Image (cartoon, rainbow, N blue to C red; front, top):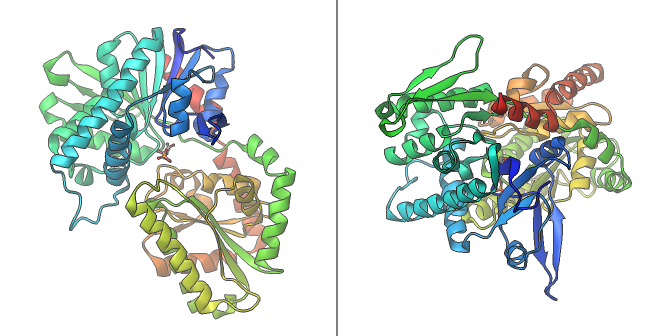
Length: 485
Ligand code: F6P
């Protein structure tokens, strides 16, 4: 990895970086390294490679680290003004772009694109520009730059202007909205977003469905830019256009379905801390009972509440399950700066309590809800699950659906939303649900709970194989190679 002052050959840019700092009361800084697909993907290029990860300082600890010159080799943290960052991240990225791509608006009253929105959009531009400038400054001649996600949609276009020599890729970890929904955005904003991403040589998506939706948006929203879209049979799809009357440009679209890191998961899930939590969970569930497990960030798109309503419908429609099954739901905090997330988090707890007070008995708690993030306990639940419930209303991929079959102790039946990106790869061995259909989801849970053991084992084997088709390191290298080709 390079120091932030050496010119890097490979650069990754994302809002959240691989490390975060906490500030203790005595003023000392503690560093914590994060996990996830991108972190393990990047490790594929090896510690000697000239790679640099550019990310934003997110907390007071991060800002203090930047200001006092504390840092990790290979990471450059940007100390962007806190209010600019908040308007860009909370205001635009999480409250507008995330909502558009996950189709989360309650449209009779929202969205409202007014003067306040325009002000926040200005901050989003400033924040994207800070990344583009830092990347331009740190990249070696002809370097490859991999820009991540909706936070940084304008970066490729801005960077292209500053450094035409670079190979630029953009990757979306979210779904992409269909044109009918995307065009809720003001026309000039939609156009700016698409042109920003098309500043890249390649734009990547997790599934063909999101790639197609992106191309559809380009075709419909960029008519003023002489756009042509291609989806040839044996070549990658692409978009050609003339940005603001300049020379015609072509951007290739790629699909890279991030898979799970099986080696890491299998080893990690057998360690002592996981065994300990497994024993504790078994005790909480009670002997001889089946488990329906879900593990999510408490994210509006994860559909945790409808999942619980489906479980309640199961207990209503099939009283024989009362006392014989437990819904183990881990719903970890996410984006608590936003009121709508706080309200949703409260609703998850409220519904869980309601089910418990309605059906619970002296020795049976129907819903075991945990809200404190604990990775070892998540792995324990993965191992224990008889049924995995993954029912997002829309999801870029959903790695939980891929991880559970890999570490499962005795096979798992996967109830999977057709709106999760993972459904494209796992559908044949999952029980598919429409995430809005609570009755249908209850029926799917019953089917999953009663699936014969041999069938369940067979499905689990095939799910685990599909889930590991493109492990994080290969996922990353595949994109890098395609970008350099
Ligand atoms: O899961 C989709 C995703 O866009 C990831 O790529 C990204 O890490 C995350 O969501 C952003 O979440 P947060 O707002 O907590 O950083």
